Image (cartoon, rainbow, N blue to C red; front, side, top):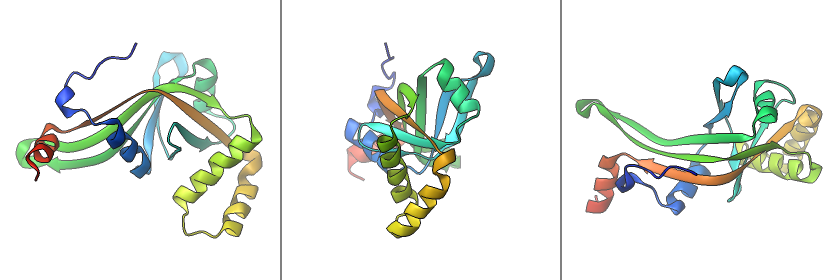
Length: 166
């Protein structure tokens, strides 16, 4: 169903992929948009170890696309160092594929937005965080991406450095 990575020597382990998803602050969510045009949108997220959660408004292009087709991919770039003298970049990234849905369960929605708030405002006290969530609650939509397949890849130069112990 999913293609094997062509450059297997550059593949990240599952543990490395998970670390990238935990470190990342944003990624690009790709959906089947209007008139079958790809629709890719930068978005913040939180990874809970098995699923990825996003927040958005209750209407718009993303939700229209999800309602038509629940398949999605999500890409996080962990590193992207331009190395001009080599005409390349030293990159590390992860792509996940899966099904995305609108969360209807109120408790799951609350848990997801609390995780997002913890991630993006870790120094905020609980009372302030709860007040912000309460203000946004009526207009808040939570999306859940169930991961069916995950791959990670790093520039060959990074893999060589790792193998040589540098």
